[in-house]
Image (cartoon, rainbow, N blue to C red; front, side):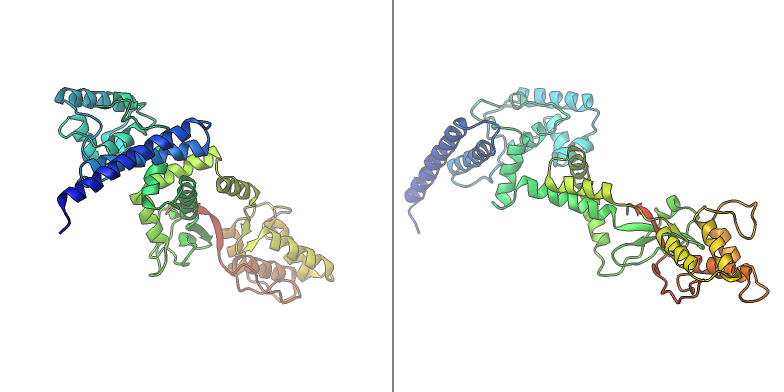
Length: 386
């Protein structure tokens, strides 16, 4: 068994070295630009050294950062006054206890205990409350706070120090970029299909569709999807629901445009061109087919097919009802399957075949060539949040 005096001497040595390290780090930070990354890192590591010093004074009995109010001796009167101050600031910010707890990443019970002075708050709890910008709470207003115990730097420094305890390779920018990507993937997880039968919701990862249909896209976006077993979509949705801070921070990053990845996402989103579809065919595909048909010999069949495609592109009247409304998928389906031409090769047969090509992904192209139908999936209309 090691001698207790020897162990106590080692703890004293750890205390002395930790205090010396914290002092040296703060001296280095004072010689640098206060806004530089080096100064911020030194101050963050000094905070960690302070916690090691406090832990070693107790011979390693208390966990780092969670010992109850290690800042200074607090009285019942100080705790009551701070609880009233916190409640007033929370009410001024228009936050409920649950909303404040979510922003500070603590439990709502902890907020209640602090406001009612039922339990003294830990240093970590006070740091989290001070770092909520809506409160406007200062460290000097916390119970038992002293100049010696006040954390240096901003909320970003405190966050950096907390992340370092997890892994020295983890940085704030890495976490924010990960949140941004997670939220971007979640937004793109599902889309709404519009077919002649109605609208339904589909998963962009596993391809599963909602078992029920809706009349409108807005209604279809709310339909549940029975995802395939290995699909990651429900797992990611669960993570984002349990940690709403992911969506909040991702939204802030998109608006602030501070990171390289947020700038890249915004640039690609602006450059993206949303493809419009006419039934199962994109506008580009319809226009290309119409151009190919113009190169072939003109006859009644091709004239009817061209008239139907021009109507779909809003460049001509309906070939069946010239005085009717503009192109709709419902009307195109009616022409495709309810109009019966008297004979093949007539103008009406060309109209019917062109309508079938628009609404059916496997239908044959209306003009002479055996074009392989592109885009065999029903059209996608926007994205829907899961």
